[in-house]
Length: 78
Image (cartoon, rainbow, N blue to C red; front, side):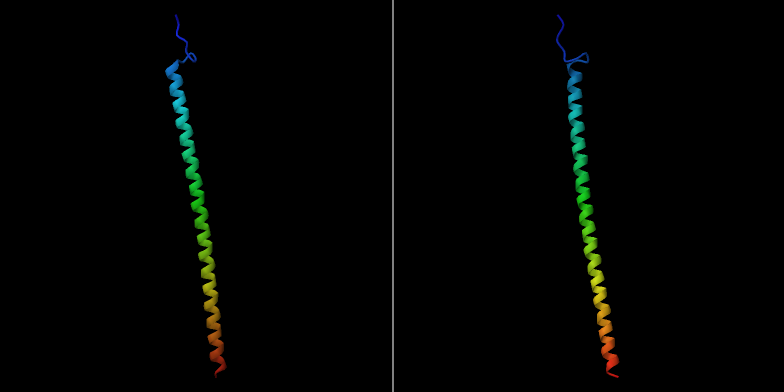
């Protein structure tokens, strides 16, 4: 009497293939999750850089306006 197997490879081969497929799916999920986290960090970094650049530009403009105002005030006192 021959035992019934899932295919010609045998039951253990099928079990190892199923476990390998599950491990592969888990690894794919971890890679996709890491990619999403990396994209989020990059987006936040770009936003922070934009805010810092805008703040620096505003501060520079303020300093130029202040200097111009002081210069105008001093030249008017002569």
